[in-house]
Image (tube, rainbow, N blue to C red; front, top):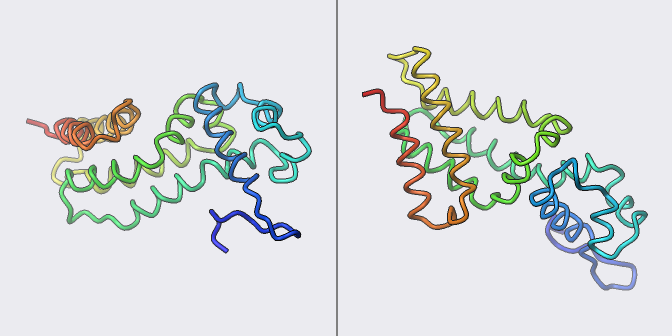
Length: 186
């Protein structure tokens, strides 16, 4: 059975409690912040007991990892598929497209530094920046200015995808164009 499918109960009905918990947690992490959202808040929002929530997720860190991991996995997979034969525009466009389905997760991750600390997301971010930097860096220009431009392009594009209209193709295209312009050293 696929992970997104509700799990069968003994009586043959299905339950989507785990998915409901994840969706509610993500919404609360994005709006309130990771540190300010308790397991009690999530349980109350869902109208379930904390015991029911603990059945699915023994700790808040387990729940957060479950919420954030698909996003991390998708970006890791994308970055491992890309190679330096692509143009900076193609690389940054692919990165933007990979982030769009995970905008709520991205918002939750960037909104609250506590999530980054508790879940070692700083290591994930550093890994992505290193990989994107390797893809975008100009081997003929290993200067600090070039590394800074790469970091600005990557970080700026990531933040631009949090704009309210980032799901619109024109907004994504403008964000990618701005990131590419940040790389241009002219």
